Length: 307
Image (cartoon, rainbow, N blue to C red; front, side, top):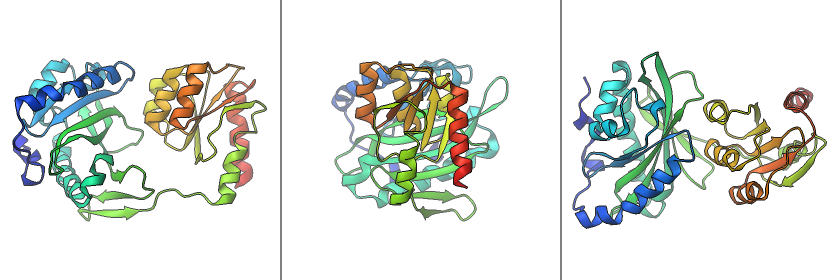
């Protein structure tokens, strides 16, 4: 059986944190609370000095029937009590592997590290496959992770694993093999000029207008839905979202899910605040008179013609 101490070791040990440091960390908690109000995801702040959770958002979907305060008090005991026993060794292994990868990164780049992985939690109905993404929030003077931000969402995959480590701004990433027990380098997606031109076509096939351009969009898939929680759970990155949701929350979902562009159907107009957020976050917006079905068919026809 997994014990809490297996999640903590020399590599992630943090020392010398004072009460004054925790007072200075309060704005991070307040920012996490504000972020939690705008997303269906659950938000954690992990404290590697106290070896517990400094903050847990109040999202019942990912709390397995507990309150947020219960989970905060349990800390890593939450995983031991609510993750299937056969997946707990995976969590301890990827935890150690993640910190080894983190140590390989220069201190200057560590703030931009992100690790992502999938595992099940035990809900009252059935096991639920979720995704964890962890990134450093506060580093110590010697570059160790004191506080990390963890976002929890529904996984778009079908099984546990999918362990990736990347540095924001770099095209490549590492994928961890649970059979070879090591990180394997992977190439990110890089489009040729011809592929870029094909992606640009996606902006013009809808008979509408581009109101926010994203000329460097790398589009490889599309998803049609008006339920943003469904989009978060199932829409992959490098996608086009076909929807009628013309408000700021749609841009927030695109940013979190890695969606490159939104097609607003039925002549839905993007308000100014949505366009400003899209331009800031690098999300394209197209307005069209087509219905969601018609826009989906257009994209499907384009994909078939390209094969």
